[in-house]
Image (cartoon, rainbow, N blue to C red; front, side, top):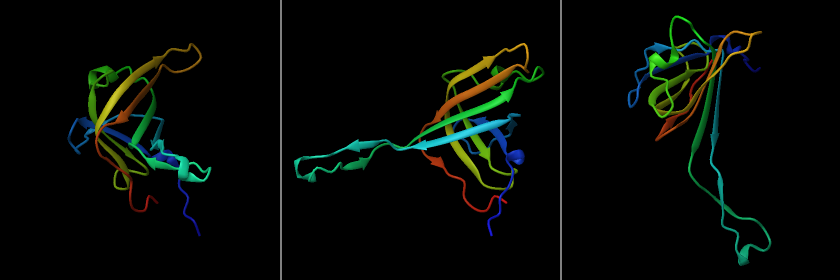
Length: 139
């Protein structure tokens, strides 16, 4: 029988780029990791009319959504466009599996103000270099 679990215990931690130590908490409400490896088309005359591809470069798009903390400015944490940080995205508490980006490149730390909602932040970026996938049981 499958063991499903809630994302309510997911966590986000950041640290200094190049380090696996991530001591700073980012109080997020949603994160998304999208690993990709775009195919390189190598179809040729000998392919008998079938497409042939090879793997290219691993890419990792990351998006983290949070309510803006008025007492802890995200820009004071170094979360600025063009900066690198280390990033851990925990699946279910800090003792379980996590994504590790030792060099996470911040492309865009956008902010959104809507009079009907809390001030919001979205941190978008990509992994640079090797990335560690979560392994082991999460629940």
